[in-house]
Amino acid sequence: MGKMRNRRDDIEYLLWQVRKMQAEQQIRPFAFHRAVVLLVRDERFIEALAICEYVRRWCVRAEAYHDGTSEMIWKSPRLRNCIERIDQLYGNL
Image 1 (spheres, one colour):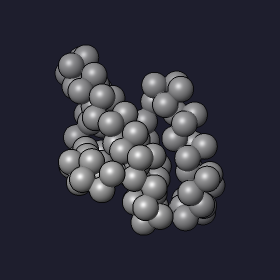
Image 2 (cartoon, helix red, strand yellow):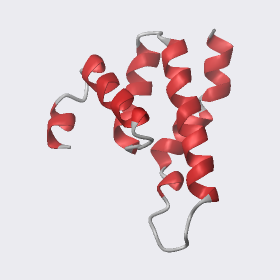
Image 3 (cartoon, one colour):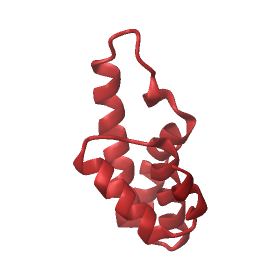
């Protein structure tokens, strides 16, 4: 994770991390949120939307299968922000 923080503005590195995590059905709030922020800044709205849609699906599944004892990552403010951006991103297409 330290390497990721050192490369927080390297969009291609972040996208590599995000795609790797998506393939493994995982999520890290910082990486996903930062990738969306950078993609929106670069007006790469379709890619940002795809990540936000993945975040929404992941959060819905995580909440549905929560066992009552594990972390509630789906409540992360960064993930919530990704989900809140979806309508705005559709408006930018």
